[in-house]
Image (cartoon, rainbow, N blue to C red):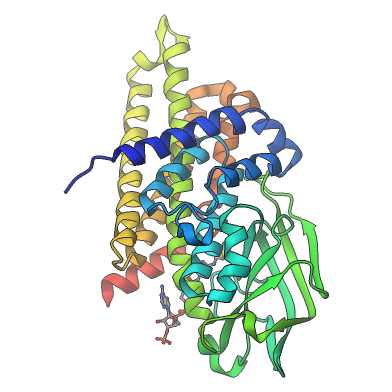
Length: 379
Ligand code: CAA
């Protein structure tokens, strides 16, 4: 077993760190306050190859491994989780889904611009009544000659307005349950597609989250992904990798907050010495560092399994549940270490605490991860 990162991994980690500090840190507080999508920064992330990191270079990607992706996600998320969620959805849900299951035509037409970061994508599964219970899709796509006619509403869609390519999960044969579901590539500017109001969120406020409505949208049959009825498995397999991305985002939020708390504890004096010299603070820092290291190892193990083409479903869910709970705990403790300063915006930790919460909810709640883990260990 080798825990050493390669030279290439270290270079990617450094490139992501440098980008986060020079391009994302300036204005991150204002973007959060004003709910401003980091459009310019996302364009640059795309130019650097961070939006199609694992895609084969023949389809415009960077051809990196999943370990590199975890390292980059951690560094970007330390500074700006609103940017890293765009990166995670584009890489894990949209590009991976298309590269793994798309036809050659679908890859040429849609994957190449997505992997190059020329456009971004969104993954449309959740509905008002189908969040965790993903089989209960109400959106329908009914066959009509060489098209499907799509009707319904999707909720809480990350990149809802900024994406131009949507991967939409819909029921085609409602009587068949999970086997009657399909996945489709839908373009945002097609007639009948409407972007709803932007959600006013607790955290990741710079990312744009919308509901999307479909009314009699004509989707060519050539835009269905995989065989008829493959949509639920497509969604589950894609989310399996997505959970590694969100686990890494949670890891980054936690380690960002920890680094700020560590620095502050060495600067701030109370009762005649730096607060880092008080055991009450030392124990907090020790617990933060230990939990973060556990989360990092789980993320890297899931990534390594994926790179070895082994089953990573269990490892991805373990990484996500542990990293997201670590992020919530560490960020709350980081605010505590900062005292009153932690509760105001300039010190960043209150934002990281708000950003942490979503990692326990999206791409499968902590409860869903525990369902996946329990099913695996009991099977
Ligand atoms: N890989 C392959 N196939 C899978 C699978 C996986 N990981 N998980 C399930 N399946 C298959 C099953 O084998 C089964 O197939 P068969 O009928 O052929 O045996 C079929 O799918 C149905 O599976 P289940 O009976 O297990 O399905 P279920 O209804 O009990 O649901 C669940 C299981 C794990 C709770 C699932 O519904 C789930 O993951 N829910 C959470 C959904 C989610 O993560 N939503 C996030 C939205 S996207 C998002 O958040 C993006 C963003 O904005 C950042």
